[in-house]
Length: 156
Length: 300
Image 1: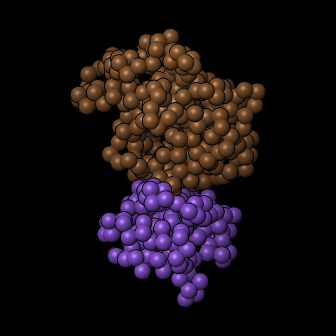
Image 2 (image 1 turned 30 degrees about the horizontal axis):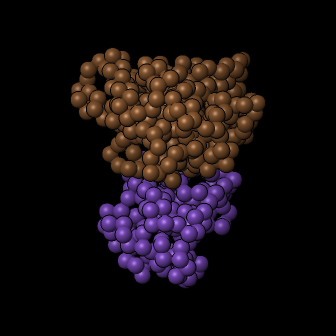
Image 3 (image 1 turned 120 degrees about the vertical axis):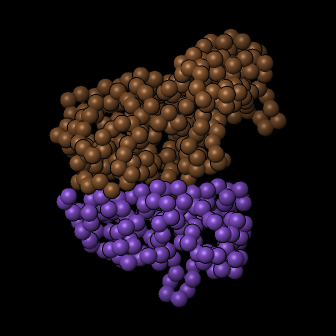
């Protein structure tokens, strides 16, 4: 296999790297860039634990080839906080008990962030539909929906 | 993951050159929401031998395949358009809201941001959600190779589950259909394990018109997926309805015709005791939702 050279902006920093053509974006982020906040839950795009933003859109990193992101922007969970200042969604998730084991949390936060950017005043039903691609085995989802709704109301 | 080389051209001409050189050793990838799972598992549902794949041809950056437009009474959707683009397209919301509704509930937001119309059709799963509405819309598909371009009706596209008429050097570039009349009504149902993020156990799309006031049905299309071996319009049920007044009892009968056709084409299988009563209700409910007045009002 011929390695591919990619230049990609990850969390606002430009990265140039050589990747195997059959390497997923998930593997590139975790194994090559040591950004282990993005998790592998199922590897087949069903659980959403690997959700990152690709050019602002939520995608399953396990289904994206690293070579594809040449020239693109990727946002991972590590890019949400600014220094020590948590993103409003992160603050809301903590305040509302929307984090238990934390494994689904990076994926849910990024999904929620992209969703609120396009839907600033959602109904609870719309929020539920927005996170349909993110499985949580701990919380039962209520607190997650509460936290996202609270952020949409400008409470954080 | 099997080894392969990867190329992501920025023009259709370049893509056609790649695939003409590598043919069966080349697999097309757009969103990867189906293909990457197959590559990861090392096997393909359609009997395609993935061990022969040496090259992935990524068509997601080809501008000619990523547009949505209307021309001379036809609507043309690039095959590399992601489901989310289709669902939110103002042009399609005006001309083909059925398609927007269906595309907008495929998988999850993450899957919709990657998966494409062309991939949904070319992967040829019997449960592919876009097949039924596109068949109801009378869609055709454009298949391009370096030597020729052909446009064929979607109902001639499928050979069997996960098998299409595509040659190894062809790319599905565009899906096109005549603009439906603005007073067309429609409904789409799918049934599966979850209300979201689920592959359809069966799905059905209905599209058509009634002559106002009389409730007489004209030009009704009923298309189903995972009911017959490949997605199909059920013409026997359509002709039952043509020229008749919309009514629940007529629609129940149409549902029965669909299940009879299902058994005629697929035989009586282990799934039939489940599928028979369920498809009858799905079809009759879809027809009732589309064509009978209800407190919720009509769909436009």
